[in-house]
Length: 372
Image (cartoon, rainbow, N blue to C red):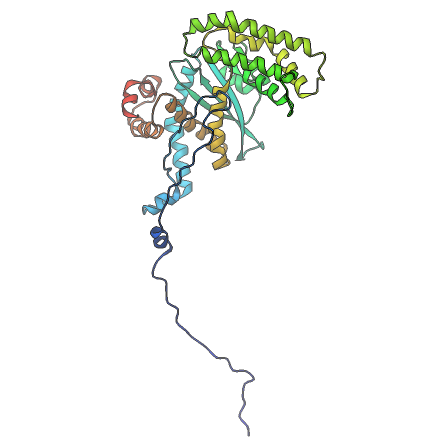
C-alpha cells in the first residue's frame, strides 16, 4: 500500500525587512531650503508707466502649517472661522466704509467674473468701487453678486450724486444722478490695437493713437499740481486737443470700414464723446479708470491661485476680507496687523454700531499707530 503524496508542496518562506527609522517629515527637514527671489525685467506699468514697487510677502495660515505645529485643525474648520469672523466683525466695518464711500465726490468702478461651485449661474461677479486718487479717505470695496446687470450698480450706489469713473458698460448708465466719466485708456487701447503690424506714422490708427498719447503726456506733466491749476490747464490745453481729436474722428469715420478695428475705435469714441469730455469738469478727475482696473487685478491675481469659492456665502465673505485688506494698504497699514487688531478688539465691544466702529477705521490715529 502506497502513501498518498500531494501534487504540489507549498513552501512558506519568511524573511526580515529592516524598518525605516526616519519618517518622511524628518527626511524633508534635513534637506536644505533655498529662497528664490524673482524680479520683473521691466518694472514699469504698461498703462500709467510708473515704476512698479514690491508689495511684500507674508506666510499664510494653512491646514498643513497648523498640523506641523501639532494642532490638527481641518480645512472645514478654517473656512468656518473665516466665514463667521467676516459675518460678525468684518461686515459691520465694511458697511460703515460703504457709507463713507458713498459720501465721496469721486468714485471709480469696475467688475470681473468669478466662479462659485454652489451657484445657480455658471459665473458670478465681483464689483469693485473705490474712492478717487486725491481723496483724503482711501477706500476700496469688493461687492460679490450673481449678476453683472445694472441692478447691481443701482442697488450698491443708489442715488449717488458724484462723479463715477467707469468703462462704457451699460450697467452704469442706469444710475439716475451720477455723472459718468469715461476712461481714455480704453480709447487709447482701441486705437493701439488698430495700428497695423507694419505701421507707419502716416497710418490713421497711429495718428489717432498719437492724439491719445499727447493727452496722457499732458496729464502726466500736471500730476503734482493743485486741483485748480490742473483744471485751468485742462481748459486751456486739453479741451482744444480733445475737440481736435473728435473732429478728426468725425472726418475719418466716413472713409473707414465700420467693422474694422479702426472703425470700431472711431465709432466707440464718438458714441461716448460727451462722457469722455466729463473729465474736464473737475480738476481732481482722472483721464483713465486705471485705479479701478488695478484693484480688479489684485482680485484676478488671487483668483489664479485659489480658482473658485465653494459657496456663495464664502465668496461674499472673501469680498469683505479683500476690501479691508486693500483699504488698509491704501491707508499705509500692514493688512495682517489691521485684521488681527479688529479680531482682538471688536469681540470686546458691547455693540458694533457706527459710533463704536468709527474708531476702527483705517485712517484713525490710534489705528495708524497700532497697525503699521
